[in-house]
Image (cartoon, rainbow, N blue to C red; front, side, top):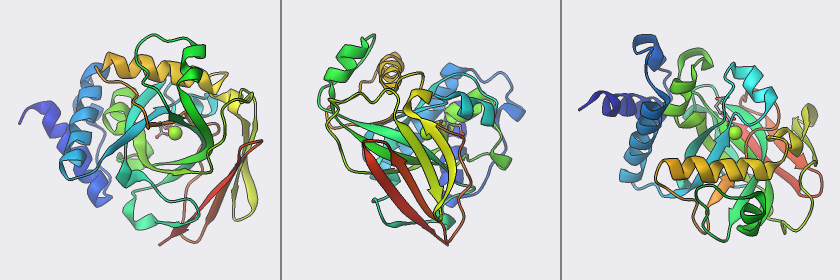
Length: 256
Ligand code: 0L1
Ligand code: MG
């Protein structure tokens, strides 16, 4: 097993058993971003080999609030599988995660493939629908601490996603008000403009980054556009809701 395969196994096992692992860059400070993406791919391949199905991609670190929260300042992407889907309105099990957090987001459903250098207009034309959404992120690293290469190797902390009702994308979604409530208390407020200035820019960036890895965004894929605010911690007993102006609400509960 070569070094990158070993890293993929370490991260896959940490996720599978919900046990934190030391940062890769503690012992391998020169781990490159390119090698980190290869580790991500190898670790997701292990999931696919266990029967999970690829359902799309996520963009990460797309807002200033997120970059400041984790001290990393470049956008990154990760891969989504069906095992990460949490049905809207149901409960997720806290025990499946190391130290989960939640991000308010919007999600795109794709009706045409997208890859490489595309314009915002071409990206929009490939969108079937847009929905309010939440991503559950869960770094597999101790203390939720990482460098850019660490977090990319760790599938950009992606662990779960909850999608609300799909809406027609023929609306101006560049600057919609967003709030995240936990147990009825507003914890985070933001705007879809926090996603790189416009959520479509995230889709344009996703098409470019995915193509650099020799892949594409496919018909039927979900693209999580990226966190809008900092991400609060999740704990058993919570009811978590995100509302996006004009798009509706999405909620889930946390059980032990
Ligand atoms: O989706 C995100 O923006 C999170 C990317 C990874 C950083 C983190 O774990 O907070
Ligand atoms: Mg996110």
